[in-house]
Image 1 (cartoon, rainbow, N blue to C red):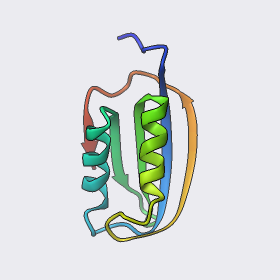
Image 2: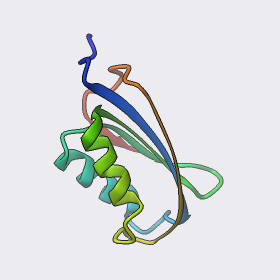
Image 3: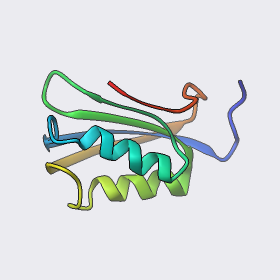
Length: 95
């Protein structure tokens, strides 16, 4: 499977009160609306890890939404990193 040359990967780790409040499903809805593929998963330390791939502008839009204050729960911090897309995802999963 090839990777579009315009694609990038965003990895964001979101901390705060973000587990048990519908945050991962909200992130999935936002990503789907932006035509991004990826995943959102709870981590043992109470954070949520969101990984998406797609057009850089759309990934940046999702990052802004994660930081917007208009999410389920309460976001205290979002650590993010951009890297090369891998083509790993075909849709969006929540775990």
